[in-house]
Length: 257
Image (tube, rainbow, N blue to C red; front, side):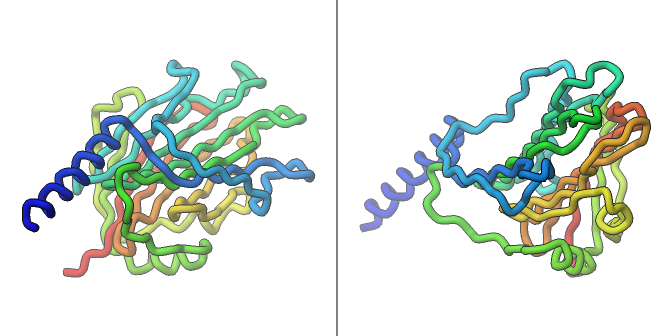
């Protein structure tokens, strides 16, 4: 009986390692795009259940900053492919696609959002795609706390009292500045009516502009609630020329000491 149990354990372990090495992931992808009023419609959702080989892709490597940022606990982190510019002067016909993947042990929470030029030659949010992916070799998972709206999210964040912020300069991405604080910055979720604030599958959270105005600085705020005591957030900051100037990885926790 003991030998049988050990054999089953080794088979399960092999399946998990094989899935990781082959990059096999399964989960549901949700796709949001513009509706009849030419605005992003969060009530009109396209579903797709996929089992796929996971990777972050982009067709313009010169204009994207690809980062792999590990969490302080070393078992999770963030993978990104972020445009270095959103520049209307150079080309006002391009699409700008950002891809962000929060990974934690056997879970991957992926969001892709796309800005394209509207009829007024303004960069406008065109679509959002989210995926809740799990390692293909694992059958059972610990469920995550389900957050259904921004108000619940903000109330939960009032309990957080520790944050490690890693600041990355896109021109020197291997050079990191570390800061610590004990509070959450609420400003992006309250002070600007032109921003889109929403929560998606796997507790993916956004606060991003609906339209990127010419010659004004802007920020993308993308977060993921990993657990009731662990929230990670990327602040992606651009200057008035649409040039990427900094990325901040904020790791919020509840310190019970």
